[in-house]
Image (cartoon, rainbow, N blue to C red):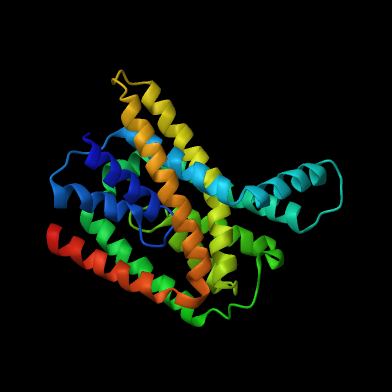
Amino acid sequence: MLLPQLIAFALLQGITEFLPISSSGHLILLPHLTGWPDHGLAYDVAAHFGTLIAVVVYFRTDLRDMLIHWFNSSRGAPANEHSRLGWAVLWATLPVGMVGLLTHDFISIHLRDPVIVASTTIGFGVILWIADCLGPRTRDTSTLSKLDIALVGCSQCLALIPGTSRSGITISVGLALGLTRSAAARFSFLLSIPVIVLATGYETWRLLETSLAVDWIGLLIVTIGASISAFVCIAVFLRTLERVGIFPFVLYRFLLGAILLMLFL
């Protein structure tokens, strides 16, 4: 890939990975609008690794507290807010890990159709809008029950369908359960860490099975670009979400879905 293509791909992946607007919809649209070739598996790995770096660095204090108290609670120490959040992230990751492993090939073959992506982009945009309008937005993550965690965890399985948006569906369920916008987004971003680790590990394993030549400089550019853009995106999103609200992202999803339908129907 040429340098402009690498930079564009890295920025697009870094920004759309965490916003509730569907990264898969954008990655399908990019080569259609530009005529560029498919970026390939190696760059996927690099981009996901970059977004992982961003979210780990941004939430480094939360992760430190969660890991310390989770480890202590697993050894019999009394549970507290940090350990409960650590357990919540762990249990909410199990459904998508198992379902993703079983359905990855089927989804890659049958569900990456641009029309399907357009439909899910619009449809789950409606769900996000309804959840934001009807949710009481009075709770924080310390109030999550086992049922809440199970519902959010199972909702991540829907994000395996291209166009859904993992952050979009988990924020939607969080809002529907009564979390504030900031709490729903924070929990969604923390949940992204083990999910991205699993996805990156699986993609790396597939990459090692191939005999493709490796463009190390290109991969480094994508990793750095994705990490910087993702970090900025997380910071701006969390700082402005309560003030800006969800509707701008819903409207954007409608526009993206409409463009995809016009191009591919």
